[in-house]
Image (cartoon, rainbow, N blue to C red; front, side):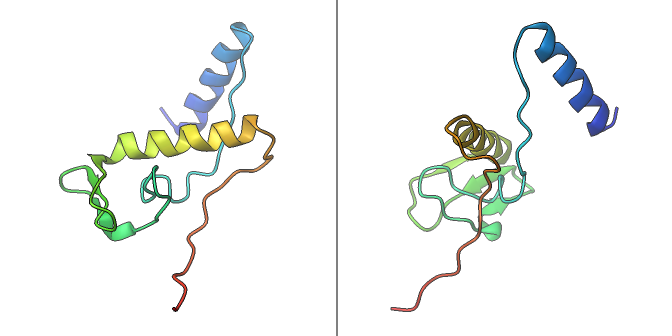
Length: 95
């Protein structure tokens, strides 16, 4: 089954329940730490399916769970009035 088919089925089932499906940008969702917002591709370990934040040493989770938490946050931003929520990778500032 293709993603487009899954999306259509999900939207159909949501309508039956009087709900809606919000499509959000997936960019950086598996690379972003949900708590501090840091985006680091190298912190996602594909072979162990983990995301380990080395910036603050307080976050370690399954990479799919990390992505799901970030998608939830994007959905919350949408419901709060942001029409096209997305994450952007910010370059570090020089001190």
